[in-house]
Amino acid sequence: MTDEEVHVTNTEHRQTPPDETVREEDLEPYVALRYIARLFKVLAALILIMLAGEVVLGIVIDGRASITTLLGEATRLLVMAGLLWAAGDIAVLLVDAGHDVRVARILLGRIHARLGPPLPAPAPAPEAAPAPTEQAEAVPVP
Image (cartoon, rainbow, N blue to C red; front, side, top):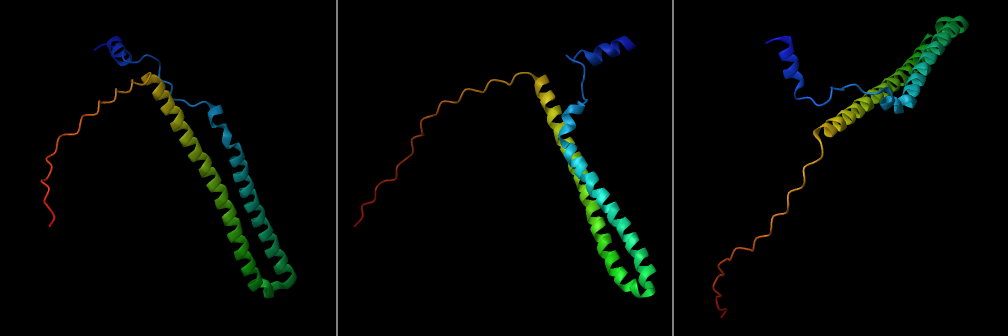
């Protein structure tokens, strides 16, 4: 089979060239979620910087006596920073999930448009008369 024959057989069933790309403006509504994710991550970084400053000041001012207090504060601040960082990651995950849903809807719309107009609905079947049933003989009640 020659290259020309392959080209003809591969394109003869297509009416339009394939277009599987998604426009950038179709993905724009998630800008606010990206800013929120960035904000959470910046806040987590600031908490870690505050933690480092608190540990340094605690050791400089009180020395070894501040270790137990600093451990409790450090644990609390690390958990808070971790939660903020996780919230930022969840916001990014929501953006990605929203993009996936939007892309799927766009591509399904394109598939629907390529398939053409919908087929006409079939005519409803006429209702058939109920089949005669045998009636039980009436039994006299004494």
